[in-house]
Image (tube, rainbow, N blue to C red; front, side, top):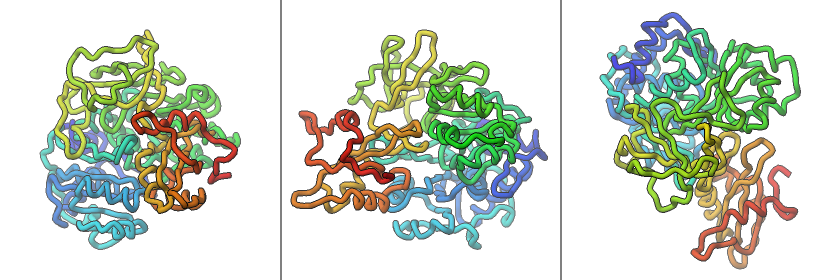
Length: 509
């Protein structure tokens, strides 16, 4: 079985580490051998319910064993899993389903009403129901002979400049993620990995491949708790943890206590950690954070290792990849840049990061509805970075209009679309303002329709019915007009520069 596929990873790990614990989640402990059996019997359960190789199976599931079984079971069968953000509802959920066109949808019982509301027409399985594809009920199947370039999952971007886009992620991309991150974190079979991040995002989903690559144990928590994080890591026996940059100040804001050091973790993956907090975090918790650059569309292109890190830097380019910093004002240039003569800006100059690879199937095979990109093309990342003379890369900000709050990328496009659906809003602009938690808070400027009055609290309440909780604006300014360019585009730099004023309504104030 090809080890550059998910079934190949499962099969090889079961052969080499059969009785070692692979997964601990919600009180369930699975060995590697049991995980292989669960993947094969989940595939049998899926097949018994009419699922076939190539079919798409969406999941609206939180961190639970059923989601892991579905991911590995779909891969074993040759089907394509589509994990969806559990915060989606209404128009955004409808968009994701319209884009991915899943034949089946596996949904958590508490979230089933959302599926009914958007009118999904496919077959629905609800957790705990007799129709749910439970491993061990049906006959185990032989693994489908998937190839590394075949799509294993469709993962949705956060839609930073437009509607969310479904990314076709091949089996080989997951296998490469596993190898690359395991190497960067110096993982071995003696490690226990602990993540409380959602499995519908690339970060947590790829911990499955990382653990299988080296035979490590993986403990998945249901959700992040700043007050219980280190106690939970200690209970897990974690030697490696996974955090996001926004989680770092939350953890540091907790009162110091014995749990700070009463754990075995000594390193962690911490993309986006503010440089000023890196040493503080290590000194207090005894954990060295490893940064890097990777995205749903790419892989771990830039990274560092625990013994060679720099606060505030992503790292250097890893073997098998190339990265350049180019003129960031490429608004008319497509996502893919062909040709070898793409000129880099001088070292020390901010610009947009573009990347490419010579590793087969290390990158996604494109977005839904689009052709597979040329393997040799440079891919735009939308990140504004600086390359130093010694090859280390430092993140500056997003080139386009992105808001990042509590580890989630928020599309200003989606926030503005929700605002414009308010009957009293004529125009709206969403933009980031600084947060005390190191990332952004969502602020909006809204223009009322002629003759109408706008209540900021009502605007926020309207958004709460349209958007995930993390995307609901904290700050609302009601203004007479938005600042525009000569071509009618909103000058968001002006709005960001003005920021929160004495007249700004604060949802948390």
